[in-house]
Length: 208
Image (cartoon, rainbow, N blue to C red):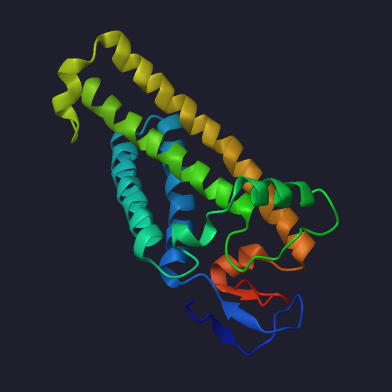
């Protein structure tokens, strides 16, 4: 097991030791994704097509970088660090409605892990349908060779799916924010600050 980087300072929430959990690439990915998705959504709403396309390309690169970090990145960024059994995930999510969750996780907890994989899956679908829309309606982009396999009806169906998935992501974002607020209250720590500084409070029974 990799050793966590322990900062012998004190957290505002608990007065205990803090541990460096989120490295700089992870934090940059998180906040760049927030800014990028918001920008892509707004440029689509206000019909800034060229800017929307450029942002979309950037988000595709960002997603590819996150997959790389999930395979080869730091301990708490790797996918293997937050793969939980269905039983553990259900138990944790049930405990969220009680006074205290069953366990305090340094990295992603089971509910957070489910959200991460859901968002990555939906974003992959959004970017794929966006590139297909670009190819089959605007006749440009890296998937242009697939244009001849799509009828006009199929092309516009893909565009509608792209728009639907983008709107559905807003619901996931709301759920994510709710989980962040709930987790911050239940564990007595500021999870937004943790994603800015990279530091989290050391739990009384840290993960093995």
